[in-house]
Length: 160
Image 1 (cartoon, rainbow, N blue to C red):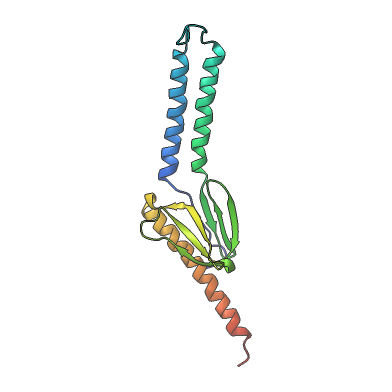
Image 2 (tube, rainbow, N blue to C red):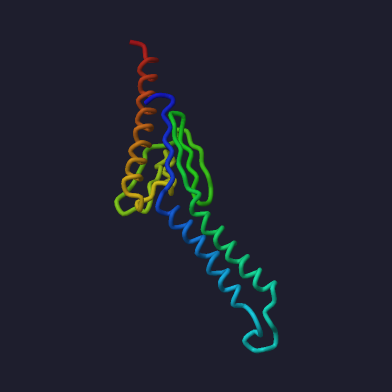
């Protein structure tokens, strides 16, 4: 692989589901807000304009929370891999990565590190089927290219 090869993957299905859900949340909360008129259940208070605006605000907040799930992505090149999950981002050189795993039945791929940690790569989700498989294969190719370059450098340094 050349120095210009870059792998960029974002999940597709979860992004679509989240955007549709976010829009629906705002619409549902706006519709509920329009029905908040008149006296409350026990008759001691009445719904005001502020209550309606608060309900719409809640819908927007829940929609923004839903959109957090569109955040995952992975980007890799010959220097290393950058993983952005729902919460947290990681930038790792290939030297600390032992392998790229995508176990059968796992919801997403993971990077196996030399310190025996597993770093989830939420951007490569099983729900995306072939996109995830292609992404894992591309990451493995970059990792193997890095290992081959290390072996070549080590062989070139040894006296014959």
